[in-house]
Image 1 (cartoon, rainbow, N blue to C red):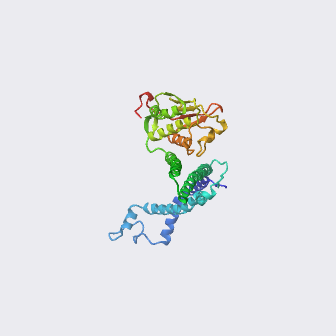
Image 2 (image 1 turned 90 degrees about the vertical axis):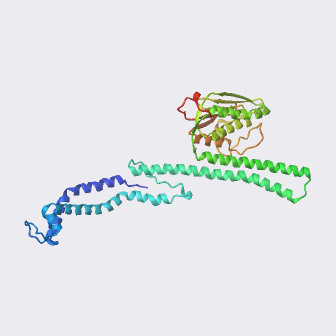
Image 3 (image 1 turned 180 degrees about the vertical axis):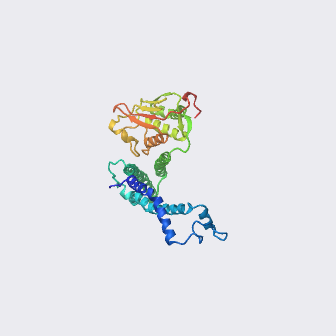
Amino acid sequence: MSLPSPARRMLLVLGAFLLVSPFVTTAAELLLALWREFGPSWCATPELRAPGEDSSFVCVQVFRRPRIPLAVAVTVVLLALLAVGYPAVRWCLRPLRDLVPVIANVGPQNLGHRLKPGPGRDELAVLGRTIDEMMDRIAVGYEAQRRFAADASHELRTPLAVQRTLIEVGLARTLNDDQLALLAAQLLETNERNERLIEGLLVLSESDRGLLTRTPLRLDRIVGAVLDAHRARAEEAGVTIVSRLAPRLVAGEQVLLERLAVNLVQNGLKYNRPGGTLEVRVGPDPALVVGNTGDDVPPDEVAALFEPFRRRSGKRIDHSGGAGLGLAIARSITRAHEGVITASSSGRDGLRVQVTFPPVADDPAAGADG
């Protein structure tokens, strides 16, 4: 759509007022002359004679200060110009008002609508392009949320259907002790999967809202505690953990940073191989690196791993299942901390996840206890 420039209209109105301004005094004198000719007299005293004691206050002031009538006339003329200027200003701002109904009608059903102001460099064209770019980001975010809600509904529907089937089977016939135990175990497993999914959705939602507080935390100590908690699990899977944890401060929330480390370590263990290695490094830049020796990951499929409910279909040494939110949560937590998370794969030696955080002013080696 064509967007007329308010700046040009304002310049036109300003030019008109500048042309009129030299004639303000002349118009005031003409107005004063007309008043003296046809209007009521200031007082009954003849001109050039002092007013008497019974004269009005106005008459006395006009006699003592002869310029008062001209000042009043100039004020009246200026007020008349302001009255004319109001519709002129509204005319200048009309292009902005015309945008209001267009923007007000934008909703989920027509997020694809754009102003398309063209390549102009005036203020309204820049505003129109900025609004279009904002709408592009909103449309992308809305579509991502819609897809996420659909995926979450699908993920929840399957275990709920399984639970319903198991319960209906249990109610349909009499079960012996072994059958009851098997049914209870299956229901428990399905319920645990639901809990993991709901917990993941809550963490993802909380991290998407951003951080409420920021505290300098020792990332190396947080990662070290997470590794200590997973060493027994790694030994059972036959995976060797190799760690190099240099002091590193990160401004953020400890709970979220712990969840970031847990998700990356669990992902590295789950998609590994017996006799494989899980390498974890903490340092200045990048702040955190987690690499495993698991399945081959085609390089063109790496980016999709950070999308919600995207799982690798390769072999696992950990068959505990998952909601497909681990790396999506890791990405959301990293963004909440103003960091960047990337993954790389050569297609033959597992996956390497790298997290970068903004530096903290304090020396990492002298950081506060996390």
